[in-house]
Length: 115
Image 1: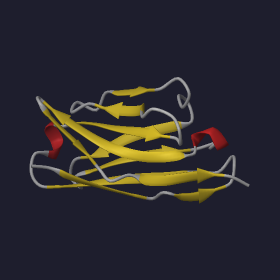
Image 2 (image 1 turned 120 degrees about the horizontal axis):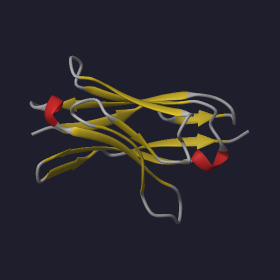
Image 3 (image 1 turned 45 degrees about the horizontal axis):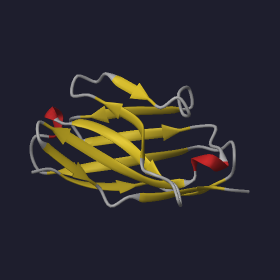
Image 4 (image 1 turned 30 degrees about the vertical axis):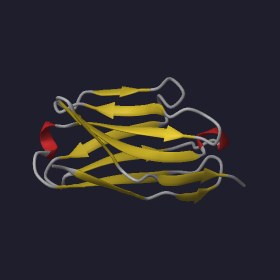
């Protein structure tokens, strides 16, 4: 079974960029649909972006055009490139993997956008 570990979070100024990575251990990564979710303080967790096993992508309206999700099945890793970051992007970002009835989560990585 796949296990997930996020990295790449941190403090960035408005307008800056960060790239999050989610490394998966175990077998079968390529068959999972992968997603990035985020949860800001006092708010519900929301889907930011997803990439299917066939590499089709979807984005939340709030990040469309600023964020890019990608996957590298040779490295068992999914990425979230975040550009033009805004203070409202501040949240804990979670990696998610789904295959059939299996759903997995990483531990989360904090992204803070502040001057």
